[in-house]
Image 1 (cartoon, rainbow, N blue to C red):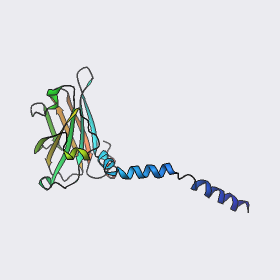
Image 2 (tube, rainbow, N blue to C red):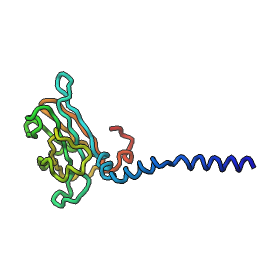
Image 3 (tube, one colour):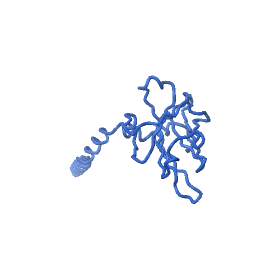
Image 4 (cartoon, helix red, strand yellow):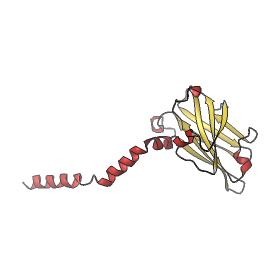
Length: 172
């Protein structure tokens, strides 16, 4: 008899653990599901000056939707560049180099601050300039976006066409 009362007490205790706050959290998460999906496809890179001060902040979001028929069969990134220097914010082939798995981009297009594509990415700021950078299609499921600045060196951002934990044990 004590075991039955003990078991019923445990069931009531555990059922009380699912709270209204948890349900509210899940509701808010589902409302912003597209934001969270894009957040998973966003990487950040900081490039530094010789004094080890961040001079260039690069946020890149890998665009996985194929709603734009003109860009189907290509790899697309929205790249945001933030810097104190106005000259550095303007992409110039002499100052910046982008390579995706050692391939050059097919196009680089500056986006206006009110562009609809910026509404679908997770991080935007009024201090950044945004560019749509397009590359030819790559069959590999791992993508390495190399970014080099003649002023501040280079860095790499790692993306995956599938969830990163599905790929082999290689650490990024």
